[in-house]
Length: 224
View 1: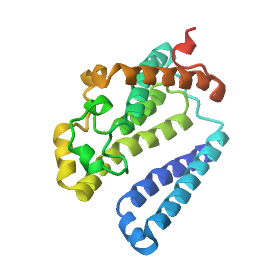
View 2: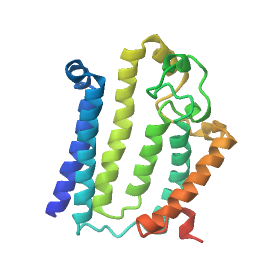
View 3: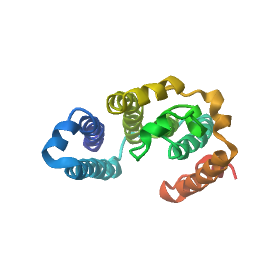
View 4: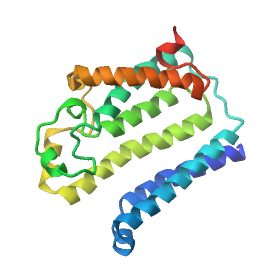
C-alpha cells in the first residue's frame, strides 16, 4: 500500500477518534481540570492538527485511482448533494441541538423546516455529502476521507443524542419523541420554499466552486 495512503488512513482515524473521545468520555474530566475555555482550546488544537495532517497527506497520495463510476455516479451525487445542502443550512434554524441559549425552550416547540426531516439535519447533510463522494468511486484517498466523515456524522449524531439526554433531560426526551434520527425523506418538501431557495442557491455556488477547487465540474455544471 502507498505509504501516503496508509498515513491518510491513520490521520482519518485520529480525526474521528479524537473527536469522539474529546466530545464524550474525556470532555467532563478535562473541563473539571482546565475549564470550558481550556477544553475548547485543547479540542480546537487537536481537531485542527488532525485536519492539517489529513490535508497534507491527502495531497501526497499518488496512487489508488479507481476510475470513477461514470455518468451514473455523477447523477447520484448531484441528486444527493442538493438535499444535503438544504439539510445543512436548515440545521442552523431553531435547532435545540446547537449550543445556544434557549435550547431547552426550543426543544419543547414543534419541529419545523429541516427538523421535520430529522433532528440531526447537519449530520445527515454531511453524511449525504460523504456518500455522494463515495459513489463517485474516484480514488481511494477520496473514499478514505469520505468514509471517515460519514462515520463521524452518523455515529456522532447517535452519541449527541445520548449527551443531550444527559444534559437536557426531559426537554430532549420530548424533542426525541417529536423527531426522528433516521430521515423522513418524504418530509423534505415541507422544509419550506425559502429554505429550498437558499439551499439551491448555495448548492449552485458550491458546485460551481468545485470547478476551481477540485478542477472537476460538479452538479449541473457538468452538463451545461
